[in-house]
Length: 166
Image 1 (tube, one colour):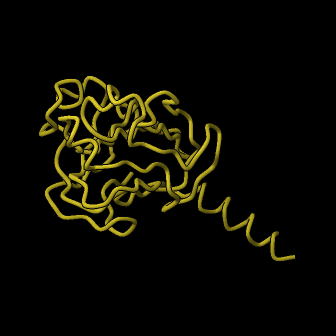
Image 2: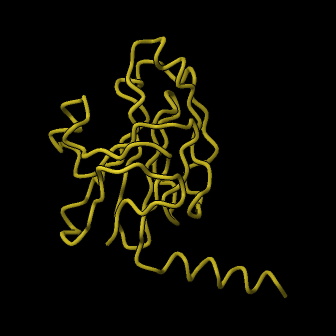
């Protein structure tokens, strides 16, 4: 009997207009300040970045895991209930680490709730390899959401601070 209520609860969360909460604790910066031209120029889309204090990236809202980088494990793609597609990319040039220091908690096609663990990274290993640990969130189809509000210039608390509203 209780599983019926749980399913209704999950579908209600999935059908709400997404509000994204911080996927990491840390300083939230505009995407233009990311030290990578591909992201800072918004070539992949608009978004933001967090200078992380922790090492586990969580889902910013309910979504479906739509992309995993199986070789490097440094990024996760999510599709939201409103059709928005986002990429969470841990570190700058960390693809070159070929998965060393990274671990996934999810699989492609999996539905996640806000706060579910997506990936873990080793900040000491990223630093030892000479890379930045800035964690970027970019909307690859953000042009379809002109009313999206991106909040930066603050310290965020993981799973609590609202960083993006539709």
